[in-house]
Amino acid sequence: MIPPSLRLTARNLIINTDPGTLLFLIGLPSFYLIVLGLMFQALIPNVFFEGHSISYAQFLSPGVVAMQPFIAGSIGGSMLWSDRRWGMFEQLLVGPFHRIDYLLGIIYVSMIFSVGGAMLMFLVSYLLTGFVIHYVVNIILIILVLLVSSILFTSLFLVLSVFIRTIQTYNTVTMFIFFILDFASSAFYPINTRTPIGLRIISYANPLTYIVDSVRDMMFASLNRSDLIYVMIVVVLSALFFIFAALSYRKAKI
Amino acid sequence: MLEKVIEVDHLRQTYDGRNFVVDDVSFYVSKGEIYGLLGKNGAGKTTTIRTMTTILPVHYGKVRILGMDVSENAERIRKRIGVVLQNESFDFASVERNLKVYGMLWDVPREVLKARIEEVLEVFDLSSLRKVRAMVLSGGQKKRLQVAREFLHDMDLLFLDEPTVGLDPIMRRSVLNYIRDKARKGLTVLYTTQIMEEADYLCDRIAIMNKGKIVAEGTSSDLKAKYGDLKTIHVIISGELDYNSLKVKFPEDVIVDNDEIRIVSKNVEDILPDLIIYLKARGIRIERISVEESSLDDVFLKVVS
Image (tube, rainbow over the protein chains, first blue to last red):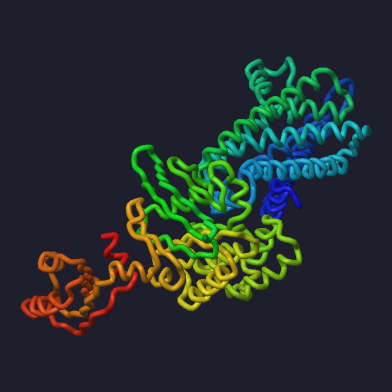
């Protein structure tokens, strides 16, 4: 017998995997990597990172990989919204599941989207910059970070989905959060002592910064103690957001 | 003694803590029985169903489904029931994919599912629509899909909350016969509707709800017998009629619907001559007149008015 949360995961994959979803998942980060990576390369020929001189496109690669849980999370949130809109949320609540299975079904799909999207970003990055990760263990570590991050961002968007009543508002809020988290993180530029103090504080209040930094270090095989702290921060935030999402979801109006 | 599949005992439900939308409701449903819950909009039928199907918590009273308390065994109960909700619900996919995914959610073995999908496509006349996306179906077609998919999985108890809304008479009869056939094989059904002839045709016992309470309960024959000395006068008229003065003159249950007057009363023999005189005096022409034995419709009107 297949566990209920996996049946719900399969259902979400079958129902929610359409070209539009995949375009959003893959197209936007690819656009960032290809267009921004190559365009800014003319302006920033090389970035000095952890003792290496790397191209800007290579510097950007971990940023777009780390964006995947965020994008997958927003897709996960829209699944709850869509199920409420089309009456399936109530129908599934009277189905052969525990309530938490529904939540897990969405989080698992986000994890699959997140890791799948990241693998494609690695491929795009390889085709664009010729960059490869030499250590298998680092790939595994990156996948683990992405999985945990998926819980964080899916939980965040599930909370939004519970409280937002229209898809227009949900999309607007998603895009707003997307731009703030994306651009106030280390995805596009390093956060260092030359970054204005106010923006530095905002960046380090942004979980995406910790995910990007740890993924970047794992990609360039320069893991250090701060990465462990970053990962711990992501784990703790993910646990908190998951609890918050589970509590909010209990209040979800049908 | 027949096994009780549903036992509702002094159930009281409230959304705001002050007003009870379900107020001291008690009833039971035995195995293999089709039990009809009738009532106007807002009578409390859907809240009662939502409580029995574990969507809403029990506020006061006790509800036991399949011998289990809903407050303690919600998940176990949900594995053994089927629910067709009043509101439409479907996945963003074709009719066939909706059925496949729904069967998969219920963990129906692949071969069994395949056969059952073909069966319900046939019974619910959806075969020609199998590749059509559910969202472009008409209201009646969506309802058929919603009812059909519930028969893909095994269950002991089926809740049907106004399942025939939007269906044409032929399809409606076909769906009712299918449900009745399933009940004969042991399925217990709780059925809500606002169409009295449906309840009359399908249900073994009927409860009429009004303002959160059960105001009448019994078999269709019981109810007609209890309120059965009622008869209905139907008069088709032409001419302007003052409804208020008619209501004053005949304070029985008078309904005027366009050019038809309906009066439900025990004293048809006394009322009828007076009615004819009343209409003639106002220059209203009587096109047709008939007196009928009371139907469940009349019982319902009498009970909830």
